[in-house]
Image 1 (cartoon, helix red, strand yellow):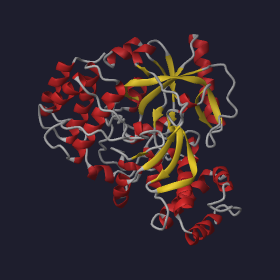
Image 2 (cartoon, helix red, strand yellow):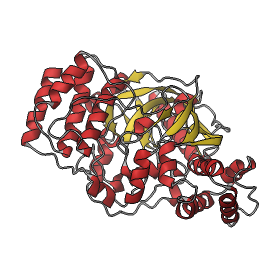
Image 3 (cartoon, helix red, strand yellow):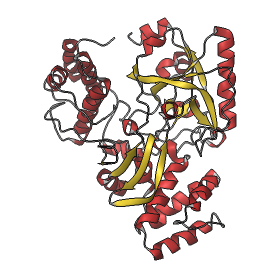
Image 4 (tube, helix red, strand yellow):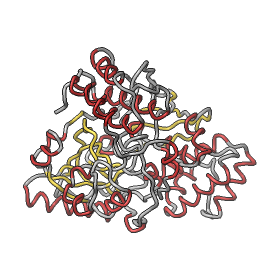
Length: 459
């Protein structure tokens, strides 16, 4: 499935002779003006109109996790980086080859992703100009150890595109208490599912399987439960996805039709949303409220409570535990207005900026990952009744099924939907346009993992 290390080592020489088209760097990243799409059930309220974009370069950023590989895999990847200086755009492609070389040399998927992600971040920041790799200093990404504090490596600047907030996000740390019973998903490859029909729809980047207990030096009085997101299927037995009743019913109707036609349960391939895609989930706002409750003085809290009562007249107060449910029960429009108000009026007076809240509740493996990327694979139990109580406060209904594993490969959903890509005239399915991704939000799509498709993808 992967090329051998020697073949991977030769590829940068080809890249050096022919630049790739994507442009990477702070200027185009900050110039992108992407509106926040509403996740999952808010299909009718999404703005699908074309948005002004300049080339955005983070589509090939890979997973970064705590441990870097050692031994033959690291040596192979290190040799790869020493061959030729590269531009950041070329580094995107070469980082993928670093990952492949590490895998071929015996590294685990997590280790290879860590190595490639760290190198790509360094290349983009200019920390090791002229090489892909060098001395690697592993940076903890999530909780180390459980209950410990972690910072952030590379992350998509769209978490908060304001220049003045970027430094805050870079310096931010968070305290995580991991769930000791969290399921570790096995690694799977797409070719294991040859011949299987699939359904795809969007999933946000929020983390699953623990509690956010603090940010920077602020210890929360009320931890924020991390419910997911992409990893929802591994933390909620009997379910692969959650949303409002309408979207769940649509997926289940499609699954029933597929099973009637093929005799198989469809697999489920959620594609990754933009960094702002998790804003609908109450976790982002709850984080801002938990931070305010723990960091603000009494006068600041009184001022904040007065402001929130303009949106929720019965508001109990930011320090009252009942306020959490009041915030969850408020309409999305109200929650959004409260978050915006807190960000504008209080982020410099004891509050937390919205970008910090987004980042704090995100899955560390997705901070810099490609929008539209396919990460996890589940199976939908077609013909099984809808789960009426999902357990997720923002997404009340569940799609019955089970999580199967995390993909070893880095694929964009349009690579698995060649007919859709052709119909939309997408020049490069590995790098779809924002308008293409927004079109995917309108309904779940279906396809089949055919042998022809796998062959086209290099399996």
